[in-house]
Length: 261
Image (cartoon, rainbow, N blue to C red; front, side, top):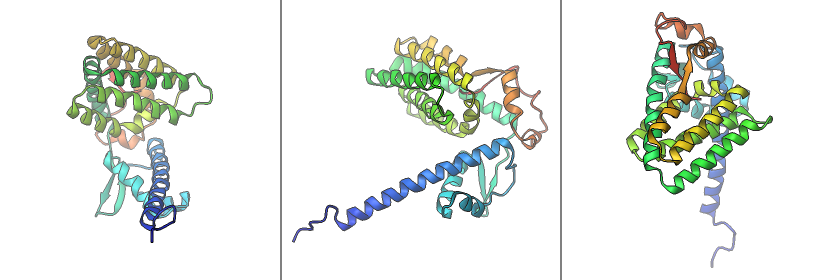
């Protein structure tokens, strides 16, 4: 006799597993963001072990979402697992961070150039919608910086995919994720959010018009910050990060450096 229940047993179990996964992933994201903030504030220092049990108690969850959050940070090399289990903060000297931003700006500029040459009509419409979302968030006094960061991520991901170069897209995406906590820091300011949204529109206009050289230039401008802004950023990095290579915020980087925003 056919089963008259709305969900057969196996389907119901699958639905339950999916709901549990969503809840767990939501918790893991919250824990990851908390850890990112503590890393930037310096309350977690390079080489310091992360107390998984304390995190589980703080968020009222099991160790599973804590472990997932740590795995997400390990994937972008913000934490390392020692002995297969013990999670510690990875030292990342300022000089290396600056070097990674220098590489990222060139990748982003190339993506914008190729996107202007290769994007389909559907992709261009998606880019317009992404820019409109950024502008709307930048103009609202109620905007949560986390919401703008997500919109910012989508904009850049559309540019990556629009390049129609799979290897470039993968490489740019990986570096984007690696630097995401630092880029999140840059978008905490409402003033910077407004500037970012305007720059997104300039980039998108060039891409949509098929102006490859202009799109590349606009993206490079968008990614470039003056040394004064880099110094502001560096002042929020724990001193132990600067000391890791014996450098300071005021030397071993060029007068102009880059950071995505």
